[in-house]
Length: 214
Image (cartoon, rainbow, N blue to C red):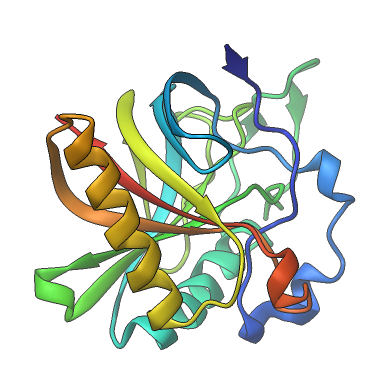
């Protein structure tokens, strides 16, 4: 079963709600591609194998509730034109000449991962698949870096509701329990993925937590 993740609403935080409000329809937003290998709980917990992709990343201090806002403000600057712009941008068809700065299409989700014991967080935004490391424009903000993400196997839980710490902790515990019951060994810190803007009612939001499977 192969899912081409090109649906769902864009991830976002309150600080950038004005920018996100001008985005194209949800069905136009690209998401990472993955294949479902195993379903641990119907419509909730899956073992997935993701294809490689590229992210723009920024590392910001905690707490977790503020890291997403702060990180996305830097990443939003990059994707909306705060970059040097590459002379040729690889598109689906054709390859075109683009004046600088380049505006990069939005994708989803925005992923947030704790670092250094939770004192800081890596906030990542997936780059459109039409770009490569060679064709992506260079960020003007030194805090923003570009990095490839290798193919990876994860166990993921999907849930709705608020972005509260309590809701996150509850579902992370369910995910860890399901992974352990299935005999899966995980490593690294959990990745928190948000797919919706802050204007989306809490009961309609799509949130995920991913754990890397060894």
